[in-house]
Image: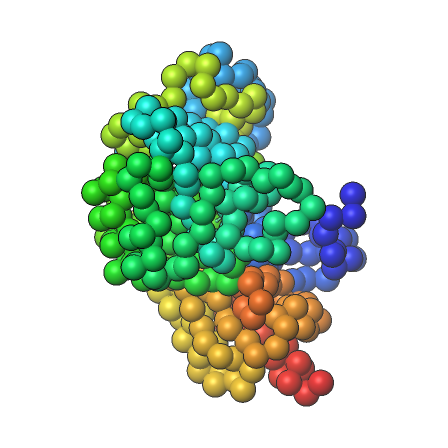
Length: 383
Ligand SMILES: *Cc1c(COP(=O)(O)O)cnc(C)c1O
């Protein structure tokens, strides 16, 4: 269907942070399939694990267990510090499940405790309920009536949040540690720690949407680790299986015990193919120095772009290899111009060029990509 304003590029194959079109043109990939291809393209161990698992069993359904999904559940909950996990297939599906946990948790405490507070400029997915949770008016068209029981708070306004988080009616507060689609806007430690405190006082589930920030993107397994907060529930997806569709809901404590047989389900979730791929991603992330190097290269990319002192650049934001470049023009102009210099980049919000390179990108590829971005900014300035 006619759902995307596509570029017309037809890609054939990739290696690391590079992609080649069917015509053989080479591009530097600062998109990683929107933060998905965490190990880049054609990663040998990932390819081998997927091929080996495909030959054994691709899918058996959740009536049965498989070794890869058992191992992944153990590894992911252990390293992330959660008690239980539910596997699904996408970010929206993970958030839907997180909201279902919140609703059941709340209603078990008080009959009216079902409101979910999210933030303005947030993005939580494309289903009716996750679009409702998304705090951007431009998404709230055509598809109504929307799911009742969602309220939006202004990011960084602790006074307003204090007023909105009513202990009798609110079951959850959900946030992205860095608002991704909304413009690569990091939330402050102070705000998030205050929000966690309010949630604890009022028995409200503190829920992180780490679909974009999670799985090493910001230089730690989860971004919340760097912010001194411990959510009750965390949704992850995008980068978890290096490109194979997957989502996961991590939960701890009481929140981990909310769902019972029959409450929730998914046909494809937890299939051994996606689990085998995700195990390779976790193996790589846990290699000594891998995540530190994501932080170092993220800093290098941000500093390189800042060093341009480009008249079109307002600011450079982000953590690890999740970078937002605030620009004074429509960011689509910059992304289009970058493509002419064989760099693939993304936009976010109204004024931001978003860079999400594969976590395995080399220093040299980062420099090449940054140089192409500078040329693109120069081109836009000239016109
Ligand atoms: C991409 C994204 C989603 C939606 O994930 P899908 O896999 O497209 O359903 C939800 N939340 C955040 C923060 C995202 O970046």
